Amino acid sequence: MVFMNKKLSEISDIYLGQPIREKIENKDSGEFFIVQMKDVSRDSGVNVKSLYRTNLKGRVGPRIVKKGDLLFVSRVFRESLPYSVFVNADIPNLIAAPTFTILSVDNKIILPEYLHWFINSESHGGKFFKRNAMGSSVLNIPKNVLSEIDIFVPPMEVQKKLVKLIQATNREKEIMKALSEKRMALNEALLNNFIN
Picture 1 (cartoon, rainbow, N blue to C red):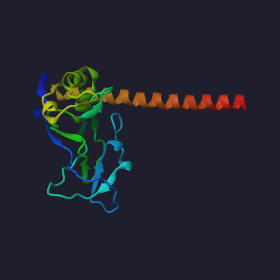
Picture 2: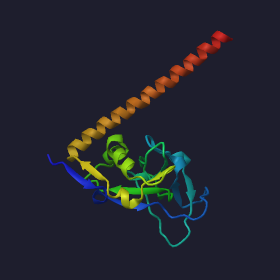
Picture 3: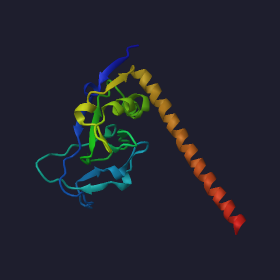
Picture 4: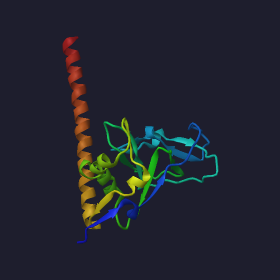
């Protein structure tokens, strides 16, 4: 088995989100879907139902985002760390707001799901971001700094096993959260019946 360390720039194309100067408005006849901060979750990916449609103005052509790309959130408040969002849906003509840095990975070397986990891991990406973030109240990881993060790349078979384990853990978290919410609702109903 061959294990490698690679700079992010060696295993991924890294580019900034779509440059947009004016306010992003939702237009029914818009040619492009645009993903913004309001549409993403670190754990759940992209919420397709909340996406706006828009048209592009200016000379810069569309920077299309595809399923399997990662959206990197480089600017966050000090209480948290920069993180990535996995694009988990195949959305035609999808572009990303300029607040994101897009990572389009080389699938022959690394699985995007594995890279997503690695970047968001406290002991891997987290350490790098703590050492290299700029700013005081708002932390920022510029593109040139992000490109230098060392990524531990195990063989593809190992990555596939790790991704299955990560997915199982995430499903377990979702089930536990749903059970907890149901338990709280039941407790609330019982307490209300007792009081009334």
